[in-house]
Length: 107
Image (cartoon, rainbow, N blue to C red; front, side):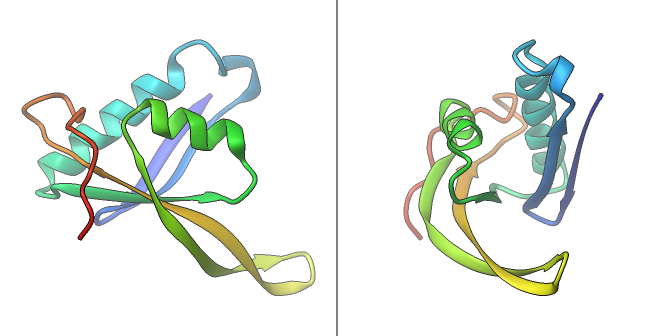
């Protein structure tokens, strides 16, 4: 149905199966993940959204995440390692307000 995974302050995966999209599952999962990351002691979280995935980017922005430029990551593709562009997004998080802090400022 849905899952999220992170390592340190980097939210590496957020997945919601197609039948559950648009039901609030993603919002709930993301908010819960932010709270848990904050409980682990992180005050700023980061995620990387594949360039061109406008639906995901708009979702993250609605959830308070801020676009901070573009990065390239080497990922495993069908033909081996390939470089892919990602939007870097960050958010200030806190347990106190359920993970929904003000948008992050530049570092």
